[in-house]
Image (tube, rainbow, N blue to C red; front, side, top):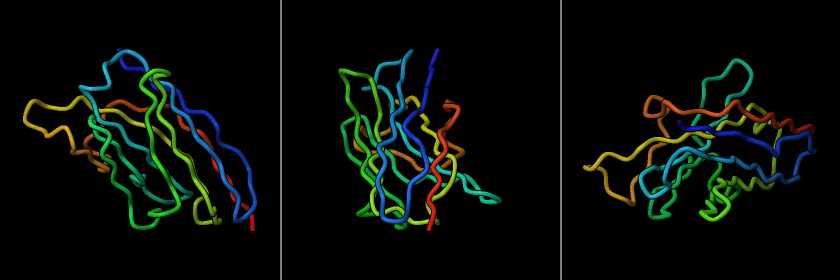
Length: 129
């Protein structure tokens, strides 16, 4: 059973940084790809970054250069380093995981909400001006 638990959220001022963590269990990383999503107030859930089973990454344009997704296979933890925060980054941040099909390349990952069925409970990030 896939279990995902996020942590590391908090309240910061504009320009600040946070490191979010997602502790994962119940699956083998090489068979999955993972992603971080965020959902602001009255906004849809947006995929901000994903990481493929071979370590390839993909980012939304709005976070490119500021956010870094990484995976520690030993600690079984997914990270999201978020820098240069602005109030527009405020929201609940979720990690998600999906088993890669045999027909999906190891370098490919998705940031589409509809592709994921396994979600954590989220961690809140609040950025004040």
